[in-house]
Amino acid sequence: MMMTESIQSLPRGARVLVTGATGFTGQALTRQLAEAGADIRAIARASSNLAPLADLPVRWFRGDVFEPAVIREAVADVEYVFHVAALYREARHPDEQYWKVHVQSTQELARAVRGRPGFRRFVHVSTIGVHGHIENPPADENYPFHPGDIYQKTKAEAELWLRDFAAKEGLPFSVIRPAAIYGPGDRRLFKLFKMAARGWFPLLGRGKCLYHLIHVEDLAAGLRLAAVHPAAAGEVFICGNPEAIRLEDMGRAIAAALGRRLRVIRLPVGPVFVLADLCELACRPFGIEPPLYRRRVAFYTKDRSFDTRKIREKLGFQYRYSSEAGLRQTTEWYVGAGWLRGAGRPAAS
Image 1 (cartoon, helix red, strand yellow):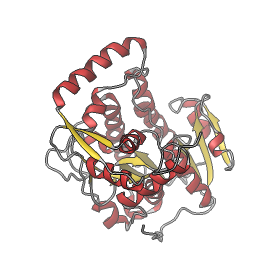
Image 2 (cartoon, rainbow, N blue to C red; image 1 turned 180 degrees about the horizontal axis):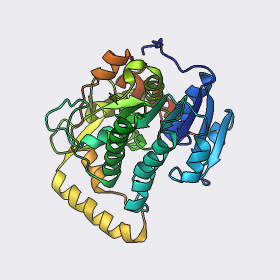
Image 3 (cartoon, rainbow, N blue to C red; image 1 turned 135 degrees about the vertical axis):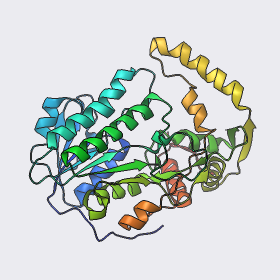
Image 4 (cartoon, rainbow, N blue to C red; image 1 turned 45 degrees about the vertical axis):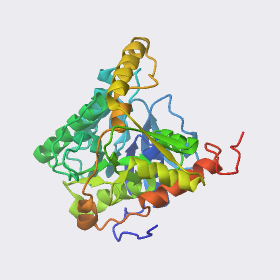
């Protein structure tokens, strides 16, 4: 693990707005901002659980992140906006909701802070998913966009709109495209940890299944750096570990941390895609989250390897967690929390 502090830091007392503060990345960022002495505002839906951040001095604005009235109140006198809010893929969400959360919110926030004296930077969180499958890895920030689902398409639309708007209106901004985010408490990649804990790890086809990871604490640090570094102004950065990792090696690293051996099982791709399509068709009319869907299948077939030098070379950013160290730390957290069983150790009740 590398422990290197950047010389660039957010001024104490800086007035910041965080969207998506109650989410996985948002919580990590909000805690780091609080530790840095920031004056924090955050937008949260009425249904959001504020308890995980109850110990922090956050001023909450309740409502949807795309509501103009909520935004106008929340951005009053802020110097920095961290736009982290995202709507993750669930069958119950209509396509229009993705557009509102990703695109409309970006538009409303950017317009609300446009031309304000004292406003310093709009840090926008996009995703490496806008690039889709990487035919000739590794890809960098200039690789073409090939979004494959409504989440990625609306994320791409929001980022492209912001970059165009900022250029026309003189809005100071930076864009971060995170790789696959993981760390203690994450549930989206937790399924991989559960599979490795069972001792067998299914992979589809014969590809390498390259994947890029970023520990949530490293991502939060990258977002803070993008807010203050002079060289980050008007730039886009992929935030991911220096090297991609094969899904098979992810599984082996998790199994090793659990004190287990891993058996990798290769399955044909075609029949699983057909089954996923059938699951989605059957579940969508009822708003039920399908147990298997096309994007989850694609996760096991695509190569997403990136050249992440730009954020390191241009901003001097260094990661605390290598993929192996981060996977081990996260696995140990899952065991300690009772989410997984370690070798010879029962799960908590």
